[in-house]
Figure 1 (cartoon, one colour):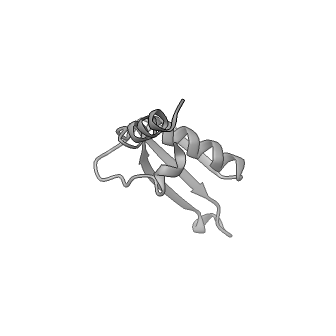
Figure 2: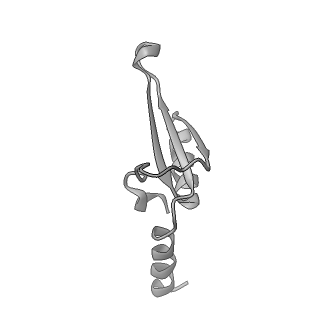
Length: 80
């Protein structure tokens, strides 16, 4: 695969519509201090992020419950 094809494939993934809700659970010092964050992501972004997050010890769930106004996964270009 040459650089042009790679850039086109990368661009297509960036433009992929968010079809997955990624929920990340952070433990706090007490159960009341736990933090839960939700993001919208494409299927590729959700897979790549979840793989990295679980490897780092986080609990993550992914489903198809994307709703209007759900913010996109931060730094989503990293998860392609």
